[in-house]
Image (cartoon, rainbow, N blue to C red; front, side):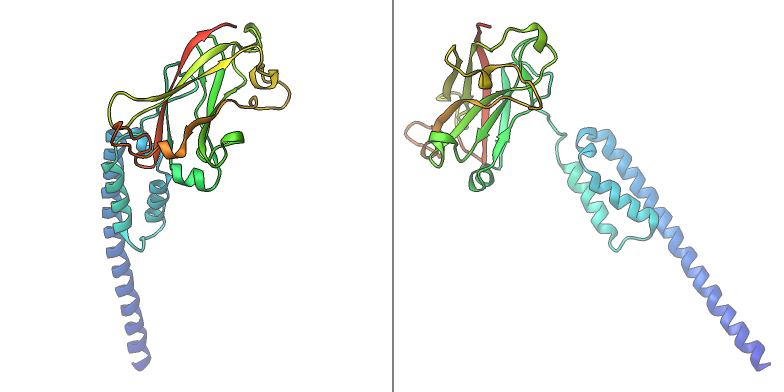
Amino acid sequence: MEELAMRLESENKALKREIAELKNSCVHRSELDELKQDLDRLKKSSPDSFGCSPGIYSRVKTVKKGRPQSLHEVTQAMQDQLAKPPLIRECSCGSLPPFYFTVENYAHHKKHSLKWYSSPFYSCPGGYKMCVGVSAGGCGVGEGTHVSVLVHFLRGEFDTSLQWPFRGTLAIHLLNERRDGSHHCHEVVFGKDVPVMQSGCVSGGFEKTLGYGLPLFIDHAQLSYNPTLDCEYLKHDRLRFVLDIVKLDS
């Protein structure tokens, strides 16, 4: 009898464990259903920003595999993502001038001497493919004192039908964040004196030409707020530019 009682007690404990697991499983499924609903809502309200958040996918996988340590982390990630506006892509390979681009994290780029590159754009339909490189800390004669802005040519779809080297004039504007006016502007002139390695068609195993442009685009001292001129080019650790084609001679 003693042996039977011990066996029954053991089976009773096992049964209790199974019931507890079933309860947890039901809660788990309920949470997973809620999570799916939130994900569907997120997709509909902000599909672009959702696509940029692979972390949410990984957390959903964690819920599917087993109960997460903190479900609050998952829901908080969704709420944070829902609070963000959809991703606005300012530029793409199909962009045409005027071409807008923003250099974020200026201080980081300056401190570590990093060069920032814009997305590619074309000079005109069927034209030259190029991008802009910005050195926050400066390069060449502007190193350590100025923001440098250079133009690079890339391999383009229409290169074989274009005249090389490139000849033309581009205008680059650094926007005043205080008001619509007093923008800082310089022109980049690709004349006959510009070397082919900076204005020619990309060849060989290179991705782009050497940069050509404005190593002394703007002095670092001019970026901060100037109450006299009501100018402020550096705001929220960012610089905003506009590039336009003044003329094409090629």
